[in-house]
Length: 243
Image (tube, rainbow, N blue to C red):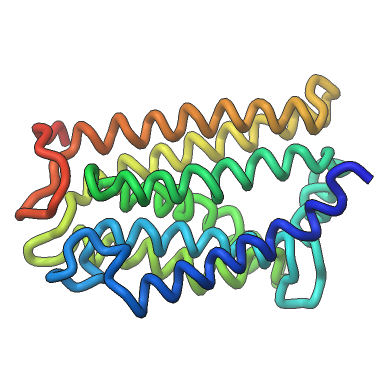
C-alpha cells in the first residue's frame, strides 16, 4: 500500500490547518506583526495568507478539484512524462514547501518582513505553469482555479498594495528578487522531469532532489530578506538595503 493512504489524507489535513489559520487571520490579530496597521499592509499577515493559499491550492491538486476528480495533478504529471513517479516525489515537494517552508517564512517574517514575498514569489511562477496552458487548451487542469482566484490576487496585491502604496511597505525590487527565487525553484522542479523520463532518477530520487532544492530556496529567501530593510517604519530588519 505504501504511501497510497497518505496521499488521500494529507490534502485534507492541510485544509483543516488552512481553516484554522483563516479564522486566526480574519477573526484575530494574532498573526499580525503590527496590530495598529491594516492587516492588508502587514507583511506577516500577508505571509501567513500566502501560506494558506498554497494549502488550499494543494486541496485542488491532490484532494478534489473543481471537476470532481481526486488526485488529479499526479495524473497530469503522468500524462506529461509517460508514467507517474512514486508518491514520495509528490510528498517531498509539497510537504516541504507547503507545510514547512511557507509557515517557517511566515514565522520569521516578524523579524524579516520581506519574507512576506517568499511564498508569493513561488505562487507567481506557479500561476504561469497553470494559467496560460489551460487557456490555450481551453481545459481547466488541476490547480487552475485556485491559481486564478488565490495566487493571482496575492501577486497583484504584492505589486499594488505592498510595494505600490504611498508610502510602500516593502520595495518592489525585493519582490522581483523573490519571484526570481521562485523561478529557480520551479526550474529545479522541471529539471527532475527529463531525468525521470531518461531513467536517471526514479520518484524517490526526484523527491530527494526537490528536498535539496527546497533547502537552497529557503536559504536564498533568508539571504535576500536579511539584505533588505523594511522602509517607512515596518517592524523588522535594520540591515542596510542592497536593492
